[in-house]
Image (cartoon, rainbow, N blue to C red; front, top):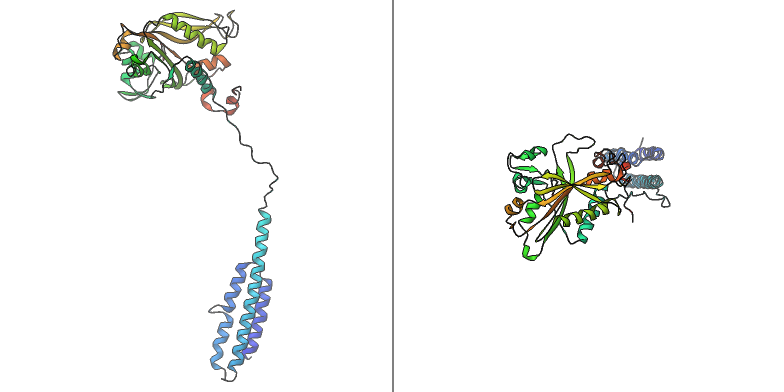
Length: 348
Ligand code: DAH
């Protein structure tokens, strides 16, 4: 068979191949098998050296025509396939812009934060500063500077997470008393502060214990501060937390950093004082500890205790929240279960 016929035959076969190809990849393979370096047409053209010089231009022309034709058919089919696949992809990825968007759930302030913010508002309104303390504290400030020297029996009441023998996770917010006292310049006015924050105890978690919980420390130091000031202040706090009709009573107690020390009860907000399950039939609920700042605490911070004195108090927002909302397990506050937390939506 002459070269011309061979070329015509190859072209016909290639066109059939192209017709039945249904991917760009196949088209590419066909192109290589006919027109590539080792392709059929290329090898036929290698036979040109045996053709007579008169016939060469004719065959050369034919070869060019076949190559051009084949290239055109390949390109056409490739473009059609590409267009089809783009169309398919577009159809598959259609976006319905009329569909409603995904709802973003709005969070709410954690119930303990709400309680702490309410208390902060109250005290800010009375001219107190809010002081942030460190959760990692030294043994010296956590204990010694609030009148709990080494081997003091009251240290045992507060199981402590020690980081080193001298550094610990604070067991209460009271070290902030010493830290603010030693920095306060009394020539600029009285010291009035509250300090909310996290505290830590080496307790086994159960319904009433958590190894991490919250406290709010409060302190007022000036000249001529009396226990009546303490009582008036805490009465306001109790009313703010549990309602305007509440009263408070003070019971003698002991804390190393105050003398005298008191425990403060609020009249029961559920039964109004008649006796019920919340107040254990006593009509009163213990809410915090307080007292008149011990002279040792003042003196160790360089404050003249013959001139200045005042009161301090410490309360637990976790306990307040449990009482206020009838929560029977402190661990609920720390599990971050939305079913629990969303019950405490701040009003307004
Ligand atoms: N620091 C005490 C505690 O963790 C709470 C406390 C009681 C703080 C009486 C005070 C206070 O400032 O006057 O149990």
